[in-house]
Length: 180
Image 1 (tube, rainbow, N blue to C red):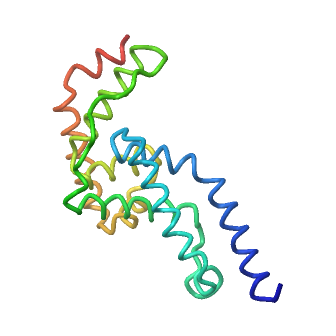
Image 2 (cartoon, one colour):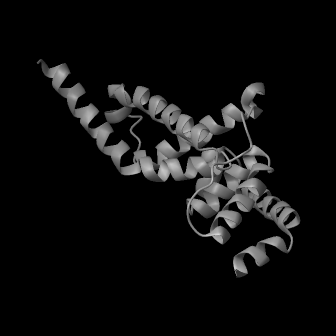
């Protein structure tokens, strides 16, 4: 194996380390972005990993002037951007069924989870992305603005409006579900 092959093997090992450390969190965020559609979430994670791998293989990107300081955070950014690009496509609204399999566990948790996922699903894609980034991934306004390519003010406005829409949709039902 030559010098180029050894460098490529090192980059592949680093990529595998990145993937193993971030796939769980990436999948959970994808589930929220897709309103609980686990199949679509898996596809979204695979698309993000594929896009990231293409970038990772470029030697200039991983070691040169384009080096990313936090590749895990960038991986989440790639996924959110892939989600938003998918939502802009016409066929992205297709869903084979709206029936979910019966999971085991507490009835209250399932009902609360489904209610929240349904409410998230009724929001616009960018509003949903803002809420997931801000409250699920616990990112700052500035980080969220960078990922979504918005101004900080636009992120604050979208956050406020999206939370208001959730409150309108859920009304008193959320407090009733959480109280049980």
